Structure formats: structure tokens, C-alpha cells
Length: 140
Image (cartoon, rainbow, N blue to C red):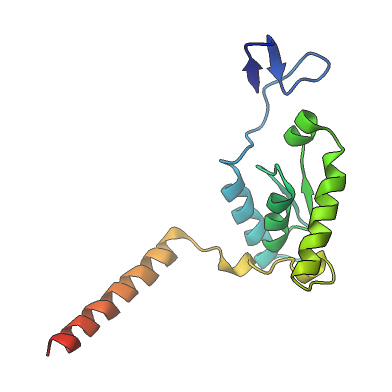
């Protein structure tokens, strides 16, 4: 929800009105991608990605993390339904450029790569340990 102070109107406008609602936008997208990947990795459910989707590349990100569909509410209210045609066309171009036959070919492709911070921290500390050992070997 927001206010356009120059035009003195609320956003997103629905017949001149708006409401407070769920949390969305770019700040929520990492949480949504993590949730989708976790569900994809642990179930056989059909997943609809939602949160922070404002262009076709965001939609592809959710699909690569395991989503079967995406939901785009705020951006559709702000820019209308015509953007869906452009998104569909851009996705088709993307698939063609990367030699994929359909979205099924990329669905879940990156789902197993999203890890907890502690996992990454452990990888870094293991790498630091290896670097320390290499330095010691080189010093001799």
C-alpha cells in the first residue's frame, strides 16, 4: 500500500480505494523462493509461487525453484493484464535461447541449491582451512 502525494491517490488503486494486506515486493521474494524450493524438494505437491514477482524473469526464478505456476497480484493491479502477453512471449524466447522445450525442463532445476546460511558458512570455513593448509605448504 502506498500514497501518490502528487495525484492524491492510494496504491494499488481499486476503483479509488485500497487496503492494507499481505507483505509482498522484492524483499519477500527470497523468502518465497526458499519456501517454493523447500516444498518442491520435500513433496510432490503442485506449487504456486507468490511474492515479489514483477516481471517475467521473477516468474522464471520461481519456476526454477519448483513452482508450477505463479501469482502476480500487485503488479497486475499496477500495470494491467496486458503485461501477461509480453511475459509469455519473453518466456518463450528465453526457453528457445536456452534450448528448452517447455517450462517443465527448468522446473525445480535450482531447488536443491538453496541452503541454510550455516551450510554456506561451513563451506566457507572448510575453504579457509584448505587455503591455510596450502599457504603452509607453500611456505615450506
